[in-house]
Image (cartoon, rainbow, N blue to C red; front, side, top):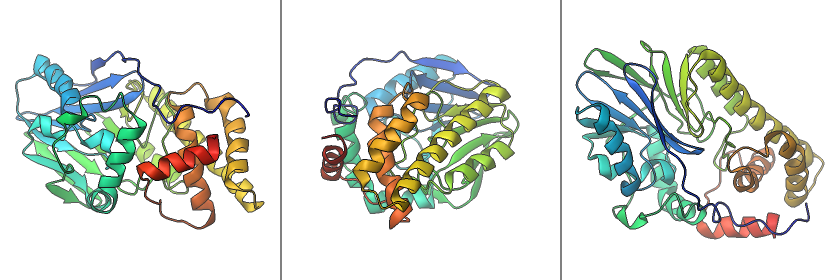
Amino acid sequence: MNAPTKTFASAADLEEKKVSFEKLSDHAWAYTAEGDPNTGIVIGDDAVMVIDTQATPVMAEDVIRRIREVTDKPIKYVCLSHYHAVRVLGAAAYQPEHIIASQDTYDLIVERGEQDKASEIGRFPRLFRNVESVPAGLTWPTITFTGKMTLWLGKLEVQILQLGRGHTKGDTVVWLPQDRVLFSGDLVEFDATPYAGDAYFQDWPQTLQNIAALQPEKLVPGRGPALKNAAEVQAGLDGTRAFVSDLFASVKAGAAEGKALRAVYEETFAKLQPKYGQWVIFNHCMPFDVTRAYDEATQFPDPRIWTAERDVQMWQALEG
């Protein structure tokens, strides 16, 4: 592990990704880009819902262009799977009538939205290109719910569900029961490393079980390609659960032995790299993930706020 210091977060990731826009059912589309954050689209009888917005309005324009290739129905709803800036700051481009989020997500925006925005822009320069197109302030939900909300787009039933904490405390999935398609946000990733800097490691596996209990036949993960059959969905759930569980078990064991964070980080990185090191953003996520796991295993049941300053201090402490 005495390799040269890794470049901070995703600062060196400047290569453009190839976008795919795929139809999963009569009502569901997936906008994916080789491991970059995904956007989901639901086309109902009378309106369109967008799930997660892209990081800037300029980037969202590409989503809108593709939606317009398949429907001229109005984009009335934006649904936020959680509060992270890379998921929400493009919202203005859609000019939606309503922005829907869980009350827990709203509370997190109040508590840490500004710090998260500054933190994420520093981590992902490529994802925040044209960041000047983001309106001043934050993306605020206009409708919040707790547990479950059902929206009818004509005769299409759209269930917006909180199935448990995992990636954040506000995690929200969108479920189309008629089509058996689920949009998971970052609760599920595929061939991409789960970011767990704001996670609840001990809750996450059960939340994945709750997703599995719906028996989705197709699933749009937070990152990675759309999962197009039950076997692929299971692989996405299993891979995410394995990573989260393996990482927390390693960190918890090291913390229980009284080891310092850096030692635990180096051990955990070495343990997980053979199995997961080829996943997108592995090197970026691991310092944040291990730091949060160490916090949860020791003295912080809830995630501490990441600021741009804390990001850099943590990175220097673990990778410097």
